[in-house]
Amino acid sequence: MVVKTVSTIKWLKNISLLFALIFCVELIFGYSGTMLIVKGVAIRHILFIPTIILLYIYCFVYIKDHNIKWFAIKDKNAVFGSFAVLDWAVLLFIISTIVSFLLIPRLYSGDFTLAKSEILDSLCMLFLYYPIRFLIAWQEISFKRFEKFILFCVSLLAVLHIILYVGQTINNGFIDGYFAFLKALSGGTAQAPGSVLGHGGYPRVMYSTSLYLMVGLYLLLKKLPDWRIFHYVLWFLFVTALMTTMTKSLWYGVFIGLVIFTLCYLFNKIINKEKKAIFKWLLVLTGSVILIAVLNFTVFNGFIDARLANSFVSGADAQITEAESPDNSANSTQKSNKDLDYEGSVISNNIKIEQTEKLLAAWKEHPIFGVGYGAYLPDYLRSEVSPFAYEMLLPAMLFKIGLFGVAILFFTVAAGVYMAVKHSRSQRVLLFAWLFLLLSFGFCIQTNPLLLSFNGISIVLYILWCAWEISEGKNR
Image: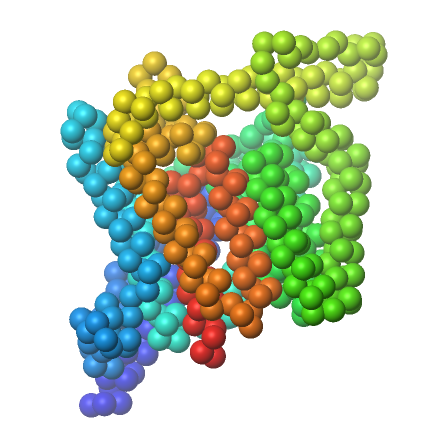
């Protein structure tokens, strides 16, 4: 009977983790999550539902099988007795999200359908935090093996980014053809994204899944002292893939994260007098700059430089200059495309400034709790399909969840930082890499409405789970 019970528990664990891994694969390669529709239901939802149900069932079975108490304040092995500040912070954030989803919109005659469209998926994803967190604490998950699997998947994603960019550069219909092929494989049910063009007509391989490239960099940084040849290859692969996104927010997010990582890492190595480690990292950074410069003047036709130069242009005084070369020359075409990118950047930056002003003005009318998810400015729509979607994250969050909701969000982040820092004395490089991922993602989403999505929330959860992994690592 005991053998049968053990076998059942082991089977339940394996099937739960298998669904979780398949769900991760779909998140990384599934784009918007609608690459396969089964009887009107997206494949992402079909995978998510059994994943979260099985994980919770396994946790409940494990608790019963190991006689773990639910409530025991002084018992650190008890479920709620083992709750750390981060666990309470996440619970508080989930509760505040439910209030901003179900209660606050009703007070201001909000549209429940829009609120559901904006936040329901993200809210459901947040509940994944607890089963994985406990499986980490119980050492039922091999985080190292999981991260090797994720690194492999994200490396394939980086290769796919490069292939799509090069293919689109050679043939304008390459990306659309790629998605048409995937749609055909799904039996024609896929709701696939299409090609994305920049203001100058250049291709961009930027989708919500592109955020996982930052995770790839993090997984390499945490192993920095022990890099082998293939780690260097993967690093430059990820750098190249990042360039194909042609997305300034992603670039600047990674840049800020790397600056903080570098300062912390070099300071630590200087104190420990590890000259070889210092030289190796500076060499990697130098190689990265050289690679980007070479790519800029070859594959990307100078658009990396142009995009960066146009980062902060705005205002009515910004002008487009005419190309000096004859219209039929290659230089004229290139100059014209860069002019178009300049003009598009001006328009985009002006929109962000105006959007921030309007959102903050609306927030001041309900500063404490906001007006709830699904809310939008009737006289300022950025999307007819998703009127609640705004690029400027912080002003939009203030408008929707108010100071109280934003404060809880920052408290959750602070709790994660506290947990990671508190238990990282012997894992400094791991801590620095974790800070890189946190800051890179945090800055990247400030001008992209990517947080409230399956992909965005999955990275938030991963950051929190990594904080737990750092904490639990002290006991292993």
